[in-house]
Length: 187
Image 1: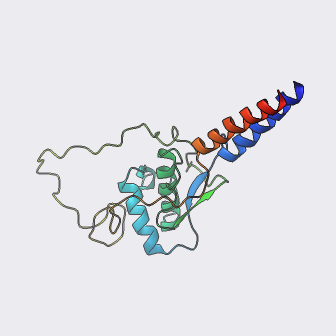
Image 2: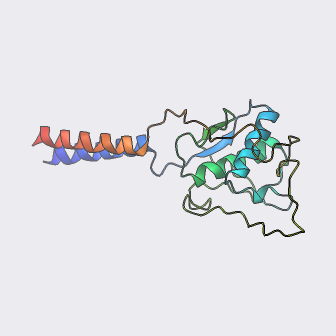
Image 3: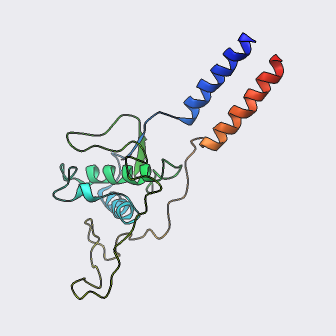
């Protein structure tokens, strides 16, 4: 019976390592991505729910004022707000997963959905109630760039899931299956 408990404990630890429970990860811009591709992906992330307020001129993550740094912060915000879902850190191949914290100085990269505003936090846009002081159209993306396509030029749909990382559901299934198999064998 003691051997069964030991094997069960080993399985539990192994599955938690596969799932990555408790292991922090961040989504950052790839160093080999072009500035144009990063700008397009940055505009998409900020328009699709990433918290980009810290990237504004008075924000804690404005400096360094580079497309690489701003993209990394926005990509990570998007990734964390989607609870690190598979495919949420791709951005047309301009992003990658990091296991070391990219935070610096007063710019803190969230490492969980709740710290990023949570996957359940509604992301809303204030209503436009025919206010004459509100412009009716935008000719440049809100977060830079020179395209006239708004916040998501060339990106009309979310990125496809090209991730090969195991999902939590798959890992949980394997855990239950192998746990019951071990208990059956030992019993």
